[in-house]
Image (cartoon, rainbow, N blue to C red):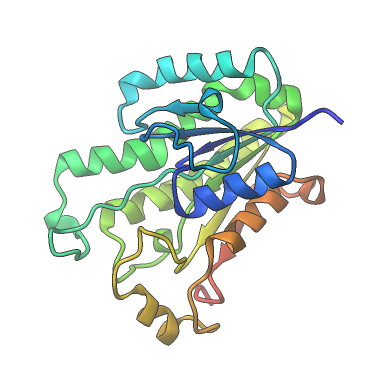
Length: 243
C-alpha cells in the first residue's frame, strides 16, 4: 500500500507529540510544523520532515507553504491536523479577560489558532483533494462556555475555529475532502494551569484529566476509513464535561 502522509501543526509537545507518535507507529509519513527546530529525540521522521514555522507570523506563511509543497514533492496529502494553539496568561498565570487583553495579544492568538488554519487549508487543498484527505481542527471546550482558566482571546478563537470547521466541511466535501473538529476538555498537557487537575476531579463526570494519547486516537479515527462518512462534526473529548 502507498504510504499515507500527515501534516501536523503544533507537533512539539502534548496532543501534537502524541498524535505524531501514533500516526508514525501506524505507518504514516509524518510532516510536522512548529516554532521549534526538529529535536533528534523525537521518535519519528527526521529534520527533512519538519518545517520550522511560527504560525503567528502570517507574512511568513506563503514561504512556509512553498516549503511544505516542496516536501510533498507533488504527492498527495492524506491528512492535515491543525493542532497549534496558544493561550496567553497573566504574569501570575491567571486568565486574560476582555479588559486585560491587548490588541497585540488578540492578533497573535487569532493568527495562530484560527487564521493560519484557513490559510494552510487553502494553500494545500490540491494535495488534500488528490488524496481524498481529511482535515482535523483542534477546538476546545472553552469555545462553547466561559472557562475558569482559558482567556477570552483563546475562547473566541476556538469558537471561531468550530465555525470555520463547518464552513470547510461544506466547501471542501465536493472535492472529496472531509473536515471535522475535536473539542478537548481538561487534557494533561503543558498548556494547563496549575488548578486544572483539581478542577477536573471536581467538575468532570469521569473525575480525571484526559491524556494526549486519548485525543490522538480520536484524531486518528477521523483520518481513517472508519470515519469515511463523518464530515462537519465536532467530537467532544472531555469525560462528559460538556453535558
